[in-house]
Length: 359
Image 1 (cartoon, one colour):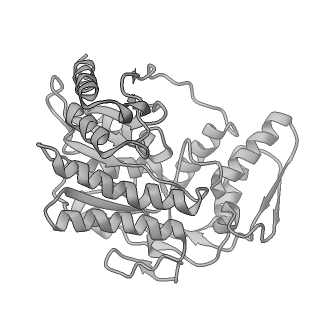
Image 2 (cartoon, rainbow, N blue to C red; image 1 turned 90 degrees about the horizontal axis):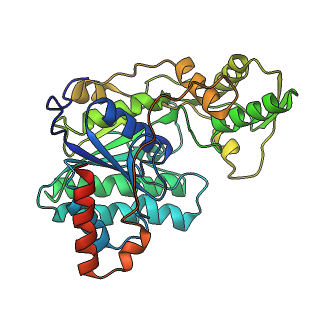
């Protein structure tokens, strides 16, 4: 991958907000492969990087600013966000309000980092059969899509105003190890894993599988984030997808076939608003990736089967690979309670963190 650090004695530092999540964890791993010094900031330790325990959503602006000042990143990735399972208020707080607070913090840093925001293809709204381009309309029909759109727009607006150096990635339907169990592929993989454990055939109760979606391997998404961290793409909105619509029925059939587990699929409408129901909604979603190819030099490298193999493996529906990486380092000094400490306490904690990060 081009543009990665060459001086391993002094690697540039990257902060991944939400590094313990599905996409955030893969982003941490991708930066580490590129010899960056990576720190995840999240409530839980990240499986693929050193971690700082901090509830970002609950932290005060002062706590966030002190943390960022102490760490001194050259790249900040925002992979925080409430997914489909969150309630409306939580989605607004994490997908919109938190983004605006983070932008305010990044603007105040002495050495302004590149701010890479991970958005969502759902910002476009319901699929209409056409190819989704960055210059096309964004008409979200769900609270999730609307709140993610507001977050992406806030990044682009702040960058256009010269407040931050930001870029927004509009990510399609990501597949891979560790994906949420309430997604359609995650639901299928989890039920197949249950059948493997019990030694019985699986009965998959799903919504009508009539949709076509653009699926992308989460490892390719992570590589795109790394490229967006150093390429001259400030103030740009960039789709990250494969560019091909795949029937969700094909995804389900591949998961079953690749698992080797006997399974019966029962399709029904399901509860309104359920994740399986959303996965079964109709329409063809195909996303343009030409801008990513032009501006980032990025193209997806993994096939659909590659991604689904990882989904099955991480869910326990296929043989798991043996982990070889050492356990990442976790910093306990700055926990969520830090937001309630005095400025003097925060200054001392910042100094400790800076020292710890040098070890």
